[in-house]
Each structure stands twice: as C-alpha cells, then as structure tokens.
Image (cartoon, rainbow, N blue to C red):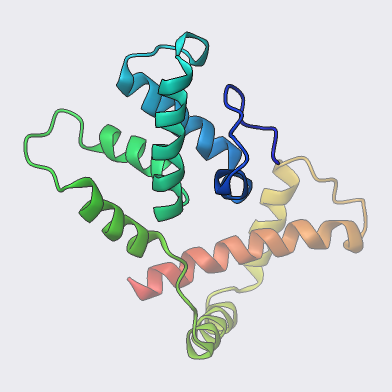
Amino acid sequence: MNSSYAGYTPEKSTLNSELDTINPFEFKRGMDYELISLGCARLRESTLEERMKSTKRVVKNLQEHPSYYTSLIHYETEFRNQVKKPTFKKWLKEYEDESKMKPVSEKDILKEKADKREVAATIMDRQTHKDLLGIIQECGVSMNEGTDNIRPYYEVAKMAYMEGLTAGLRN
C-alpha cells in the first residue's frame, strides 16, 4: 500500500487498491478540501469518522476525474465573486475538452515547415544573420569559441526569429 496518505490507514478492503491508483498530491489536496468543508482546519484536529467520510468522498471524486480538486480550486478561484457562473460539472467538462492534447496532422507539420523555409528564404538576408549573431554576442556568448559552440545558440535565435515571423504571416 502507498504510505503517502498521512492521517488515514484504511481497513483491508478494496479501498487499499483504490488508494494505490490515486495521485498522492491530489489525494492530499482533496483531503484538505473536504476536511475544511467539514469544519476541520487541520488533519490532526479531525476525528476518525471525519477522515473516513472525507476519504471515501475524495476517492470517489478522484476516480471520476484524476485532478478533481485541482480543477475545483481553479474553478472556485476563476469564478469567485461572480453572480453568473456555470455549474462545476459543466465547467469541468468544457475545461477538460479545452485542455486536452489534440493530435497534430502530418499536413499541419509539413505546412509549418514550409512556412519556416519560405521565411528563411525570403526574409532572412545576410544582415539578419549578422543581427542574430550580434544578439548572441550581446547575451555573453564569445564569438571566439568556434562555430561548434556558437551554432546551438544561433539555431535557437534563428528558430525564435522564424517562429515570430511565421506567426505574423498566419495572423
């Protein structure tokens, strides 16, 4: 059993295996939240019954959504002092859909590479390359180090420059 759950030692039951699958940091955040909602300022001030009740509620909520309490605190912070706000469950579904990683198609990757090549070919003249090297030098990189030591800094500067230009082209 995971011993990261201070203040509660469950009986031998299915709760043991459920606790092993839960993020301990999220569990602690949930226990703090639930105990405060019951009127306990600290874990040590709570009774065994309050901890049991809170634990069951936390496990249920974390099985429903792995970052339930982080999202709940985010929701309460974002909609504090607002009269009109969505329900937490509705907001959580929208927030989860919005923050999910979305697959990138091969077409999008090729388009981005083509945009960067187009920018590099048309806009990055000799003076731009010199300006980038000047910026690198201003940041403290010695130009006497040789090309192998300067190249990583130059590539980062060039990528940042091209990303800025391609973002401007898209907008």
